[in-house]
Length: 281
Image (cartoon, rainbow, N blue to C red):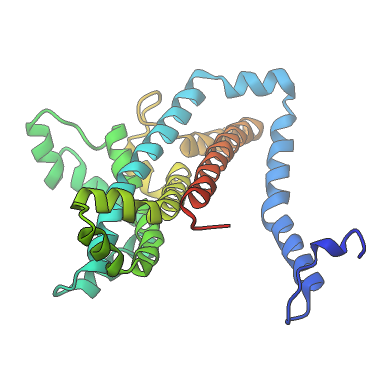
């Protein structure tokens, strides 16, 4: 067998070389080439210039706002998305199909429309915003509003990732656990959650990745106040409007590096979970 033959997987369907070549070419053109161009653009500032732009106080504040709110939104979506998937799979009630279809609305709704709608609801003169203002709370134009917008656009990723896995978990497993003396908490923590853990981590990663790069639905409710509610994608747009292309590329490169590291760690945890509970090779 040749040195390259070991990578060839036996299959009854021919065309491994052609499909692999197409996959690599497509992946390179769509993903690798733009990312390399982004890094090279930011490298044009030189090492000192790159770090000076990356460590700017306004840049660090916008990155902190984007990543912290995205993490919080993804964590909230994991909890409530799992509950929603459980209800949709385990129960039958009037209007379930309509409720199931509404989960996908953030996919179809333009992000700008979602941002305007959320702002109208949570602004100080909005329906919810007025009630919150009476309690001394401010939702819109704060990181709280950003988090709400990110929850809105990230929820479908968690629900649609967990839902098919939950459908494969037989009710007989839960019944067997109960007959062996396990209470509800033990059944959930020792039977259901281990089987759902890889899907939950995948949903968390997708929701986080979607939220951290979100722009349209966030800028309206964020208020875009520097050092308070300014997100990194907006600061990139501001740098571009200032014709500071290298500065925009630096912010994008830093976001890319942080996102890659976080998603890589999440994938490692997901792989460990699959091996630990026997749901993957």
